[in-house]
Length: 533
Image 1 (cartoon, rainbow, N blue to C red):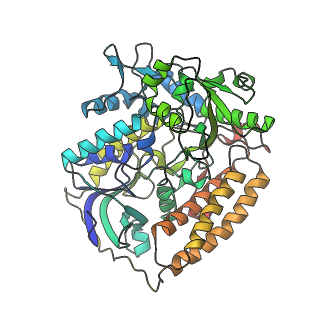
Image 2 (cartoon, rainbow, N blue to C red):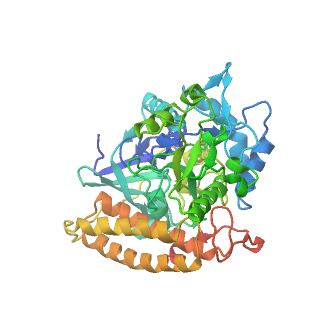
Image 3 (cartoon, rainbow, N blue to C red):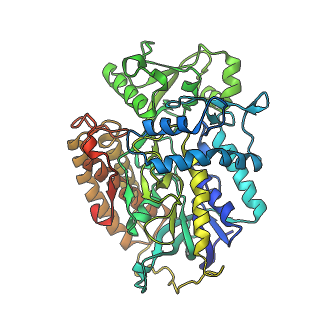
């Protein structure tokens, strides 16, 4: 299945994860829906989410506790209204997933709930250690049953806006230009509402738990279209990714620490007690910085997560995927500690939205990791991410349906993509080299621990790289690699500029030049197009 040169739909959804599909299923009752995915229809961060979905589901839990845990993890920057909406609507979203056939783990007839770092109660519903895969399966099946059109291997190049086309009237989003990865053809998709559900941008870092599709496309496109982005300095590094030369970016779920895993250094010492009284159950930013500090203090290349004190049967039952994957790399987690290192994991900032996922650009919505709803603040609480996608995917659809004029799309005359005099690309090595340099620069200078000098060095290099990329982009015909490189470089600059503006340490942003939090800076870092050119 491919796109026609011109498509016209009521709702265009860019991305096929939990947020995008939740929107699609709600919106399908009100108009035509087209979901575009960059690669395979299930390929995205949702598919790889291991831990689960946090929600108030146990008899010893309540909304106030979940709200407070989220606010504490967010280090003062959460928007309380966004937290309350997400937490209070959570249980109903879990029931909705159950109605779609999601098979969460159960114990004695009830949902089995686990606990992760930063949570004061067991409240994480899960499907073994492959929750995201199970949720994605059920959502795709529901979309198929509803006849929702999903087209694979489609990469949005840029948003179509009235301002870019010189149309009269208020500024608004009209759809997107979309590149077919296989054919190289560019389609024009016009929509009453365009939804960014493109996920995050973890590939901006050299080491990440994210899949290859996570190149910050939605943030970059929205920023270029004039929508503000916020809090891009707060990039969450997952404390525990498998450290093995052949393992790529395999995540070792936080749930292992929730079930009693102990972090040790190469000498076998349990070191978290030196860094935080909550030890292994401290929030992710604390644990990641602690591992980073311990590894640097000793000169080790990794830390170790020890599960050997737990029964093998328990590990096989609760973490079968992680156990099997570790075994593939010669590690028996029942008999030996798992070597782990931190890696870029989750983008807590994004495109600024209201409580219904609407951006400042009319007819453009952002849901899931691409957005900044105010839920996560300076640090995401574990397993609140899938929850946010479920809640805001639905909320956005309830508002987007009101954009249809009498139930029908009134479409402007949007011209087809015009490549001008662009040449066929003949210097692929340029794209590859710049891709690697962007990611390595970010890892070396804009990582877990920062300094102003490192950030300024990164900004200087990124300015040069973005100039080179921009020149190449306008000279040659677009390719998937070039589109992603352009987005990745814009994404990197937004992270750097945001980090330079926050002259304090808070949540996921830690700088040696300003090691303490400063309540005078208790505000979001908001950037518009003019701030990071």
